Amino acid sequence: MIISGTDLAKEIKNDVKHRVEVAVEKYGRPPHLVVILVGEDPASQSYVKGKGKDAVEVGFKSTTITKPDTISEEELLNLIDDLNKDNSIDGILVQLPLPSHINEDKVIAAIDRNKDVDGFHPANVASLWLKQKCVYPCTPKGIIKLLDKAGIEIQGKKAVVIGRSNIVGLPVSKLLLDRNATVTIAHSKTQNLPDVSKEADILVVAIGKPRFVTADMVKPGAAVIDVGVNRDPETGKLCGDVDFENCKDLADYITPVPGGVGPMTRACLMENTLECFLNKFEQ
Ligand code: L34
Image (cartoon, rainbow, N blue to C red; front, side, top):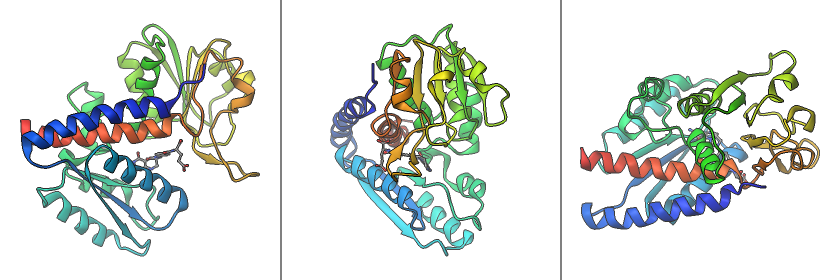
């Protein structure tokens, strides 16, 4: 069975849209999401465009600020500071990656944690690992929602996550652990990776290598969640970290690329933005 992220994302956005209508009645204005895009990377441009489109769809005020890749770190930090102080702004997202002359950690830490709709701020990350109230990072949150929607049990299952990034691998591992899965975190240096991944009832792949996971790495009956968004080196088309055609008959559940985790990331961003907005008024 192919798990459609597009369909579930639509449901989530519909729900957010209705909640926004209620919030506008109650608080007099919709949530305002600001996305900052530095440079002209076509993939980042496409993702940011998708976020703006979704934001409008759910009834938010949406602002995209584009800056040339020559912007200095100081200028970017000043911009963030201004947005932090602006009480009419509820969510701030700086699209990653940033040019190499800018320190990403510094930029992420500069965002007001109450406006950190990505859930990337170090204080938010700490809260996540301490099981305190926090914003769940969009992609990991979306993955858990996809598993739940498909009716896949997490508790007691063996989950293998390939990838250990701050954005996906580590937080999704933590969320799976909190749902009582037994979690193995594998990566590019893991020895005998197929032996490890073949143990997985739930296999999450976020390593950023086109068609990295092949049928010999998948346990029959597994749920395979493909977080990759790569360009196929030959065709230039979008493809995942999983060789979909090769694995789809073996897996009981599999997410496609496009149309899987990507749209869920965006839908969860909408949820997080509404959450930050409501926290401001309902504290
Ligand atoms: N700050 N930077 C920040 N937050 C994020 O959450 C992200 N990420 C990752 C890159 N940098 C970030 C995203 O937004 C990856 N990512 C992302 C978001 C959406 C999609 C892909 C990656 C997406 O919408 N994918 C569509 C296809 C889009 C296309 O055609 O280009 C899909 O169906 O997979």
